[in-house]
Image (tube, rainbow, N blue to C red; front, side):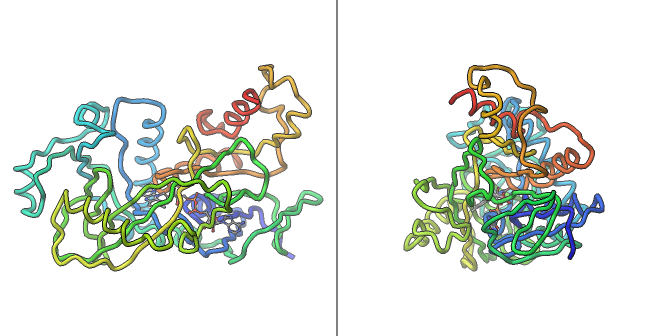
Length: 380
Ligand SMILES: Cc1cc2nc3c(=O)[nH]c(=O)nc-3n(C[C@H](O)[C@H](O)[C@H](O)COP(=O)(O)OP(=O)(O)OC[C@H]3O[C@@H](n4cnc5c(N)ncnc54)[C@H](O)[C@@H]3O)c2cc1C
C-alpha cells in the first residue's frame, strides 16, 4: 500500500500552498478535508491582497514582505485568477491620514475631484492609492495549488503513529502537516490558542465600473473576470469556547437568521464609498478566520508541550533550554493562524515551512512554534 511522503490535514490556503511547495520538491502528497478544497475560511475570503500601511514594525514588515512574494507567485501560478489593479485606502479610525501617508511603501494621494474624474460614481472621498494590491479567485487558486496531489474528502478524527508511519483512515504517510484553521487540532498544541473571527462577504453584479479595489473598513473589489465584484467582509468575535467551531459557517448557530442584517451593513458601507448601480447580490460567503492574540501566523515543527515540561520543568522558572532540545512530535508540523490575510501569507509561509522541512532552513522567530511554546511554558 502507498505510503505518502506527506499527509496534509486541511485544504485551505495553508494546506493547499503546502501541497504545492512539497509537490514541487518531488514529494508525494495527500491532502484531506471534510468540506472539499477551499471549503472553510479560504472559500469565503474576498480575497483581497493589500499592503499594511503605517510606520514599519515587525508585523507590517512581515505582511508587506509576504504580499510582495505572494502576489508575484499567484501571477505566475494562474494569471486568470488575479486582478491586480491596486487599492485606494480611505482613512478610517484605525488608519488615519497620517498613518496612511507615512510609510515605506510608495503611494499616491488622490483627492475627491481627481476621483470624480476617474468615475462619477465615487462619493465625496479621498484616499491613498497603492499599486501593489489585487483581488484573486481563492477557490480556483486552491484547486490549482493541489494539482498533482491526491485529495481525500474525509473528516479526520484520529491519527495513529507506529513504526515511523502515520495512518489516518487507511491513508499512510511519513509526515503530517496540520493546516486546520479554526477546527480543533488533531494533536494537542496548547500554546496555539486559536480564536475565530467570523465574517461574511458578498459577490454582487452591478453596471458600475470600479477602477481599482477600495478599502475603508470594508473592501470593494474592482470588477472581476467573471463580471461580479466582491464586497467584504464583516468581522465578529463571539464566545466559541463552549462549542466546536464548524468550518462551514452555514451550520453555525451564530449565523442563523441574521445574514440579511450583515449584508445590509456591508452594502451601506460600500455605498458610502462608491455608488454601485443596478446592484444585485448574487452570492453570500461565510467563514471563520483563525487568529492568535499576537496576530502573527504560526509555522513549524510541533513541540510536545507536556513531554517537554516533564523533561525540563525548570523552563517554567525561566531556565533557557535550546529549541533543538525540546521534545517534538515526530515528523509533525503546523501552519495556522493566518488571520485575515490567509492569501497574503499562504504562499510565503508555505515556502518558509517547506524550506525548513526539506532543507533545514531556519524559521523566523516571530512565527515559530517555539516562540509560543516558551511564552506559555514560562507564563504557567
Ligand atoms: C469572510 C472572510 C473574508 C476574508 N477575506 C480575506 C481577504 O480578503 N484576504 C485574505 O488574504 N484573507 C481573507 N480572509 C482570511 C482567509 O480566508 C484565511 O486566513 C484563510 O482562508 C485561512 O486558511 P486556512 O487554510 O488556515 O484555513 P481554512 O481555509 O479554514 O482551512 C482549514 C480546512 O481544514 C479543514 N479541516 C479542519 N479540521 C479537519 C479535520 N479534522 N478533518 C478534515 N478536514 C479538516 C476544514 O474543513 C477547512 O477546510 C477572509 C476570511 C473570511 C472568513
